[in-house]
Amino acid sequence: MENALEQYRQRHGLSYADLARMVGTDRSTVMRHCKAASVPEASVVRYYAKLQIPIEDLQPQLFKGETKS
Image 1 (cartoon, rainbow, N blue to C red):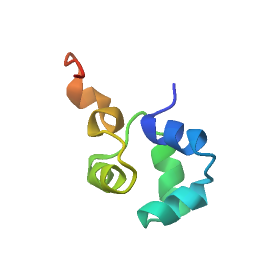
Image 2 (spheres, one colour):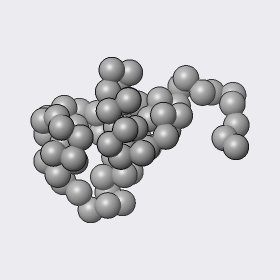
Image 3 (cartoon, rainbow, N blue to C red):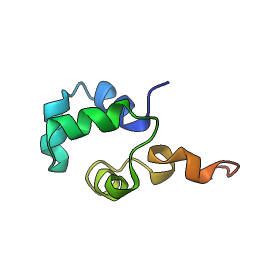
């Protein structure tokens, strides 16, 4: 199962380098985050602020048992 960041990248037809430029980090970091089960806590705010991906999608394990409104 792909995480929310990888889904965003694919949905918008972006390369890892494109996504890295958009959020102000390097390609290898974005690639690592796209392949992980969830985005590391230290990077969640950056992806939320730059791409508007909901935090609960980036870090789903923090919201287990809660329902989206």
